[in-house]
Amino acid sequence: MPGFEIFDDAEKQQIQEVMDKGFTFRYNFDGMRNDVWKARELEAMICDSLKVKHAHLVSSGTTALSTALASAGIGAGDKVIVPPFTFVASVEAIVLAGAVPIFAEIDETLTLSPSGIEAAIKQYPDIKAVNFIHMCGGMGHMDEIKAICDKHNIILLEDACQATGGSYKGKYLGTIGQVGALSFDSVKTISCGEGGAILTNDETIYNNAHQYSDHGHDHIGLDRGAESHPIMGSNYRISEMNAAVGVAQWSKLDRILDTQRKNKKILKDALKEFKEVSFRTIPDEAGDNAGFLSIIMPTESRAVEVVKALGDAGVPAVFYWYANNWHYLKNWLHIQQMKGPAKLPIDLVTDKPDYTQIKTPISDEIMSRTFSMLINLSWTEQDIQFRINAFKKIFK
Ligand SMILES: *Cc1c(COP(=O)(O)O)cnc(C)c1O
Figure (cartoon, rainbow, N blue to C red):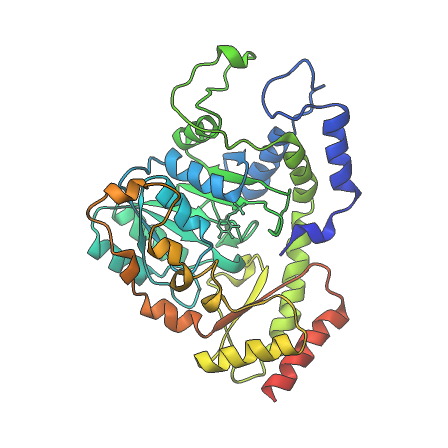
């Protein structure tokens, strides 16, 4: 998955251009910057590649989620469905927006299931949004999920932070719902150090997003000091240096996806012969971002055994998410206890779940049997063969 694996002179030249000719701030300073606008350039590239009307860059995937929530009108007391298998940022963004996370079950796509979403809506009919996370590069049953959201008038926010460039039936992940989020942090498909983007075809959400992520500035005219502020916001801006790295990285997106898909296919094809192995469901195989290969074993104990054996064989970057304390609810004590450094808005909400008692048995059953391998860009044929041989020894 990580774009940093193919950093080369292109990224350096981009930063150099900002330093030599441009300016570090993404707005204004027209007289100083010799028409160098890296954030704008990257936003245009993203819109063009992902066939979306608006892309707005921010400082991270997490601030993209915060901006997406606020911009889509999700705030104090609003209930937002989220899966137990995700990166903690998905839940943090909801809680810090003053909203209320409602955990729902996943299926073997490793993402929220249509039935999980429906069960949550049944229990909480005032659900405002779904924070749908395209985990590990793949997607869920998006047609069904979009239909459920539309039927109940629920906003679909897609977190495509791990799935940049992935698609479902011809639509890019992050552009199916009302608003999407991408991350360009240090280990993502596209890496610019720290950065993220909001994707939307909705004018109101876009206007809210660029204003909210920059203290409410309306970004009209050439004089920042004279701008008006239709709303309050914060500073979630990206810098021109980060955006510059992103420009170089984004030009490599097709190459990154091709390499991931090719490497993943060799590994996956080789593992198909083993009876014990089944794979995560991918509703549109051709649109897989292919940053990970996720394998589902018959039992929890066998999954634990295989992960350990792969580790012993020296296979790096094997993730057993179920026991990992950044990606699974079961291990998030601070979230179960809703613990911040100070009193949180959610403390004032009365009709919220008891987070110490959340049960997601279907997700537990799947995730306890699942592990993922990172698909690298730098693999040689021998690197892939080394992994296949390790599996052969374990499964023989
Ligand atoms: C990485 C990630 C984020 C957060 O992105 P940052 O840029 O690290 O803030 C959010 N959601 C998911 C699913 C992620 O993988």
